[in-house]
Each structure stands twice: as structure tokens, then as C-alpha cells.
Image (cartoon, rainbow, N blue to C red):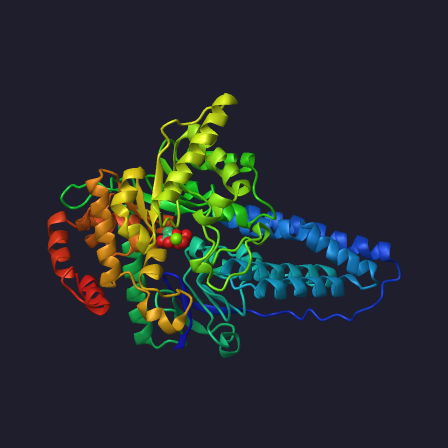
Length: 565
Ligand code: PEP
Ligand code: MG
């Protein structure tokens, strides 16, 4: 058995097809004609763009708009003047296209890898993919046809790039195993979207296996079994059957209300990063959007997205939800989310520094277009504004003042907007918990961000593996905070939601029901599973559970108790 990272749920049992790396070696030469060499490079870029557009279209049809954007993003990267003009100037300096592409792409790869941010590392992987495919085009190397593999195939590769994944016919591939990548890499995102079990980062798996080997891929536990015994095959087939049954059961929750076993209705929303994801929320039967992380609109750009651009994005999300609530969070830059062009400067403690609302309140160039865009889009649906990283009541008061100012501006321009737009506070710092009663007087709603609340409550950097054992929402410290926030919301008669990962935690849901959480916002893929758990819990049994949990003293006791429930 070989261990790796569990990247996409499911069990795959099938035969191996190894995607071997092709040699991309070339001999450098000095081109006789710079013009001809430039034409050769531009032709390769044009072929690259054509092929990528075809692949993006295929992904859009097979999976969805959001996933196809990974490939569209590659077209944008190669058309970015920074990249193409660097390559062209290298050719003008007398390098052949292969060398120019390699050197320039390698420089960008190193640059992105040096940034400690998963998104930026992903950019490095995209540039690597672009480099390989451009070299293949320049060297006349044919791509392997992944689309032609037989049914029951398990694909094994050093790395499965987005362009390779684009060729996959979902019905034929039952598993994916790679030597690199993690849960958030594009190959993982695409594997999940295709619902193909995947295990990534399995050391040396390409040399361990050969074509035709039988293999079991366990996408739940992140392990791979080569040439399984009959017993092993039977065990995993059973696990596979159970999962298929579970997914069928989930589909029975489509179109149903989100209601506890004893009839208490709660709201079940989805978290999104792009306006297109709102469609996914609707497809997964989410009732609204509980968190639109607007950072992603800013991250894919080289300058602040204009008011118009943001207006279109927010309007698109509101329109997709057809009147359903769309809670849009103002820019949460800082911490681990860097946006280089905002020039916020390097900090020793970015999670404790210039982040989110602290930035927005000081940077009108950032806040004004966003708030005006949000107001304008509020004329097209139930858009609500949510403020992240609040620690004092002055912050929310200041936000409201800004909103009022822009409302007056819009009035003078005769632009319509929702005059009663709701403004809520994200509760993700101990300070916000402590003054939740005060904040509740100013806020129209709360949403608990357990990802950060756990980090700040436990004083533990999520990225530090030495203290990772402390990063758990099951800590009594975090649980008491959650309970307190919901109580404060109830006293002030404002709704309290949760948009951190804990909202989808099956073990925690009964406790949240007992506390009286009004709204759960989870990733679209978790919507039905969350509805199922909620429907199986009664308030009465949840209250009994909560009584016991609130008396427990350690994280371990809480985790064990909740998981055994
Ligand atoms: C959170 O902190 O729980 C949250 C939802 O925000 P983010 O994960 O974007 O920081
Ligand atoms: Mg947060």
C-alpha cells in the first residue's frame, strides 16, 4: 500500500495507464532570421490558444464554466504582455524560440514558487504546463491522447496538468494517481469536479507501476494498492458500493427544504469565489450564497477591478440566484491572501497585520469601487454586504458611513440601489466574539468564520505543522465562542450564519442546531450532504448532546463524543 494525499472522494478499481513524460530536449541555435523565428513563436502561441480553447470548451461541457476557466486562464497568461514580450525580446536577443520559452517560463515559475501562497504556486504549475505544451508545439511532439484510454483506466502521471485533465473522458477513467500536487491543486479541483477518485503526491508511483497493473485508488484515505488480492478487491468494492449508495441517497435531498427531523427550518447556502460559481450553488440546490469571497476577482488581475467590472460580477451572482440571498464579503486581502499590485508591503505577522477591513477603510481606491458596485448590483437581487476581520464596533460604523456617502452619490446620479441593503459582520476574531452584543446593535446579521476564528482563538497559525494539533474547532474555547455569538445574535433578533468549514462538519452540525444557528453556508459540493445531516437531527436530541458537550474539557473528548453521536 502506498500513501498520498486524498484529493477526490471515491474508490477506483482498474488497470493502470501511465502517462510518461516525453523528452522535450532540444539543441539551442542562433536563428538566422529574427523575423522568421518570431513568426515561428507566434504560430506556436496561436496553435496553443486554438487547442486550449477547444479543451476549455470540452471542459465547460463536461464539467462546468468555472473549471474551464483554469484553461482560459492559461490563454490569458500566455497573452499577458509581460510573458509574451519577455519571450519575444529574448528571441530578438538571438535565442531560438525553444530556449526563449524555457528560460522565460522558468523565471516566472521560480518567481511564483517563491511566494508562500497556494494560489501563486498554482500559477507556477500553470506556467509549467504552458511551457511544456509550447515546447511540444515547437518541437512537433504529438500529445498523448488521454481521451482514447479504455474504460476502467487508472491514470498515473508525475503531474496531471489541467490540459491533460481536459482530455479525460469521465466514463473511462476510474482513478487518478500522481507524484505531485495537493488538495487545492488544479488537478485535484478538476478530479473532484469530474467525480473521479484521486490520490496525489504518492512518491515514485510512476516507476512503481507499469501499464496494465491492477490498482485500487482510495480517494477517501489517500492510499493506493498495487495488484490487490481478491480479499482487498472485495473490501474496496464494498466501500465503493456504499459510496454509490450514499450519493444516490443524497440526490433524494434535491429540491427539499432544509429542515431538522422535528421541523425546524434553517437556511442552507453555498460559498463561492467567482460569480459563475453561483450557478453551481443553484445546481447543487443551495438556497442562496452565504459567502462570496471577492478576493478572487482581485487576484486574477494586475490592477484593481473597476466599479463596472465588479458591478457586472455581483449582478451576475444575484441574477443566478433568482432573488435568493447573496452575501458578498468586502475584500479580505492580507493574511495568506496576497494581491501584489495593492502594494500592502511585507509584514512579519501578516495574519495580525494590515488585512481585510483594516485595508479597505484606509484605501478609498479599493473600497469605493467595491461598495458602489455592491450598491448598484443590489438593485438586481437580495445582495447583502458582509465585513470581514472586524475587531471593533468603529469599523462597522465606518463602513456604514461609507455606504451612506455612496448612496447619496448614487442618488445624485439617479442610479438605483436597495436603500435597505443589509450590512453584516463576520465573526472571526475573539475580539468580535467578546463584543458580539455591541456589534449586534449595528449589524443586520452575523456570519461566523470558523476558519479564522479557530486560528485566532487558539493563537495558532494554520500553516504551522508543529502546532497543527491545536487547530480544531472542537476546542472548548472555540465551541463556547460559537455558542456565545449565536446567543448574542438571538438576543438582538438578528440572524446568525456560519460560513467557515465547520458549517459542513457532520459531527458539529447537531451542536450548531442546538445552539440555534440560522444559516449554514458550505461549499456547493457539500450542500446536499449537509441537508441530509440536518434532516436527521432533532432539536431535542441535539440539545441533549449539547448539554453533554458543554461539560467536556478537552478537544479530544469533544471530538470523540461528537463523532460517536
Ligand atoms: C473563515 O475565516 O472562516 C472564512 C470563511 O473566511 P476565509 O476562509 O476566507 O478566511
Ligand atoms: Mg476568514
